[in-house]
Image (cartoon, rainbow, N blue to C red; front, side, top):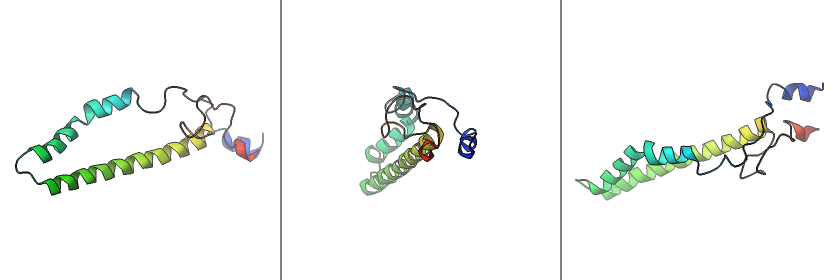
Length: 111
């Protein structure tokens, strides 16, 4: 066994990709946006529909929410790409090819 193969053994678990199950939307997407975020929706609507109204402060709050959400999504996207490359041997969907990536072992680019 070569040194690179020995290093790859504890990291690469041999699971294939999940063709058709990854991506957006999925059941978790509907659960998060349809159920869990309802208090956030109520809060944002109350900023603009409630009394006293302050549109400037409401828009500042919406800007903060958009910035925090974008920061989390971009960070998780980068982390997903890194995890896909290191543990699955290739880039995840939609950057890489869909389907199983079992024929590309981890560290395969070094051989």
